Amino acid sequence: MRYGMIAGLALMGASLPVHAQVQAIPPRIVAPSFDCAKAKKGTIDQVICKDRELSILDRTMGLDYERARLQTPPAEEATLLREQRAFIANRNLCMKRREDRQACIAFAYESRIQRLGEWIDRSAWSGE
Image (cartoon, rainbow, N blue to C red; front, top):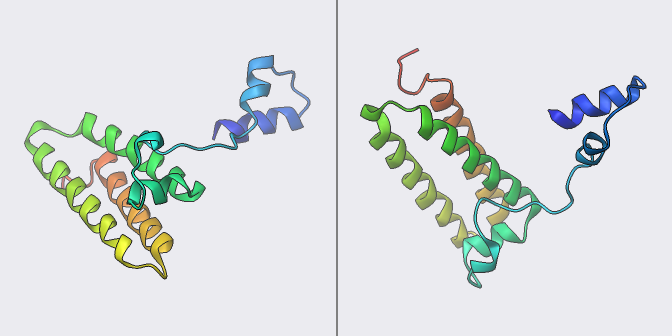
């Protein structure tokens, strides 16, 4: 959202500080939520590291999981963790699907991000 706001100000002729102008350029390299240098050959981590879309999805999911974890009441923490572990197990099954591996992994992330949104907005555990 920040990029859109800065770009909009620039279009209106607003003067931006130098640091805002630099931040308005979207990064070309996107890293997932984990260290790609530690990704072993042939693993799902390596597949994610080599794919920009999957890296973005992993980073987004990691940030959303952290937001959800921080605001989840103690009584619901075990459920959130159980769901996260199930997501990882299901996502990892995508490695068996050579023909549509990337799509399978992306779908797993998109589904998890959507579910984490329910934890973030509290509808997952408040009965709203």
